[in-house]
Length: 187
Image (cartoon, rainbow, N blue to C red):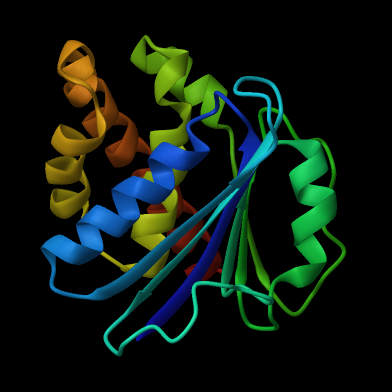
């Protein structure tokens, strides 16, 4: 099992947090992980991406050229990473922000209206967890339970109150992928 994941968006969208959650969850499950952040000098509003590798074998290098998964949260990230996904991989798109469509036929494309779903939950701040839930359901890279446990490490003490909303967001993102899969099975 090898998942090479790039998560990309603007600073402030939870890109780094998503990567940390996956890395911690992988460690909880005794998997080999790497987490390599990359961002500009700006903290909010600048571009940011993180490379995460989750594997049952030791990780030789944290650098990813052609990810198995690209999770893109904004247009510039879509434009930069869509073509890098290896054939057979998956591109997960925040449909709430990105109006571009991939023309690739050799990858799976999952469009997630993350902002709308997060708004229904009551906090736009959990949009990244909606996307993460979709990824977890599709990939089974790590369990949702490990990610929820990881939230306790990633969120500061004063933000622990967000754990229930994040859990609901993970569930709704996963449910979206289940519905997509069921609809494709019916065709």
